[in-house]
Each structure stands twice: as structure tokens, then as C-alpha cells.
Amino acid sequence: MADSAFLDKGIILGYCFYTDTHYVKCKDYIESTDAELYATKQVEDIFQRKKDNIIKKHRRAITDFIRWVKQEYSGNLNSEDIAEIQKNINREENPVWRYLLDYFEDKSGKEVYPVTKNLRQIARDLEQLAEERNEELQPKVLGWIRLASYPELKDNLSSIFEKDEEDYWIAVDAHDLGCNVDGTTELATNNPSDFDDDAVRDEILTHTAIDEINLVFVSRSYSP
Image 1 (cartoon, rainbow, N blue to C red):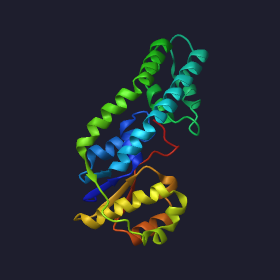
Image 2: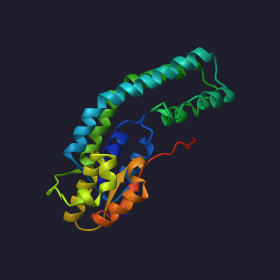
Image 3: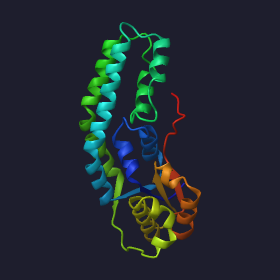
Image 4: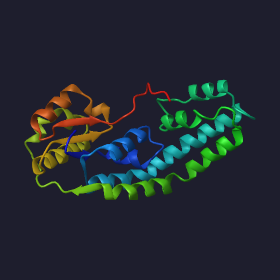
């Protein structure tokens, strides 16, 4: 286990939004690791900038699914109903698919109306709960200000720079942390599309002070 961990923006968002696909993984990571947790002011800014859009998307996804459930079912749900409801959760398009799978897992024998009413209340409370979790998170994370720009890394980390410049700077920030704190350093991210790539991993681990990349995410094959 690393001594220090630099948190990618997705870890922060995943921890704060319990409807996020990676929420449970992010929560478990932050609450179970012994590493010192670090993030930059830019990561907090990203949370504030993306918060409203995430709330809008997640709320719409939940309310649209509620509408479908109420059209298709009434009375008490049985185990076959639950299996069919979970089967109709679109993992490719629904940003809260993992949350919905888990939510309906224990709803067999329960009535549709209170089940959907509670789910609608969850959608209404998204903003308040995200802010509350963000406030809980802040004391657990140390702020980090990058001390240098490391221009040479632009060539050394060309694979990630060409994919996503924002993620490139996350790697630079984590590198700066590794250069200036004792012990081992890991970059914690839930972005496999960019960081779970052999070329990217090799470049980062070869040319930076990052000792490990810890992928904290849920695959689409997940089942409750």
C-alpha cells in the first residue's frame, strides 16, 4: 500500500455522489486506505463545476426510470418483476445504473408506490447529499499545490497528453506530490478508459515519481 495517494477528480465525484457508478468503490477506498490523501484546488473546482450537470443527469435518469416502472408495474413486486426491472436498466446509457441495480435488489414483496416514491425523494435530495458528503470529505484530504510545471513530461507522457490534457495534468500533479513527499505515491483514479492502458501506465510509471496507479472503478459486468 502506498504512503500517499493523489485523488483524481473522479474519486472525489464518486465519493460525493452516492448515485455514481463507482460510489461504493470510492467510498471504500477513501475510508479504508492508510495512505495520506491529497488533491489540488483544481480538483475541488472541477467538483463544483460539474456538480450541477451531474445532478441534472442523475436526477433525470432516476425520474425517467421511475416513470417506466410505474407504467409497467403496479401492486406488489415479486422476484420475477425485480429481475425484469434490473434487466431493463441500460448500463451503456443510464449514468446511475449501478445504483438502480442495488436499489431494486431487496424490493421483492414491496409495493410499487412506496418504492418509487422513496426513489423520487432520493433524486430530489441529490444536491444536498452531495454537498454533505463533500463537507465530510474535506477534512480527510490534504490540499496540494504543484511546485513546478515539469515541461519535459509533455513528451514523456505523450500517450495521455494526446488522449486528455486534463488527465495529463492530474498525472503531473501526482508526480509533483511524489517528488516532494517521503515514501511511495499512488495515483487513485476511476478512469480506466485513459489510465488502464498499457502505454499510458508504462509512460507514467517510467517517467514520473508515481509508484502505482490504483484503479477504483466498477466494470459494466457488475451484478448485485
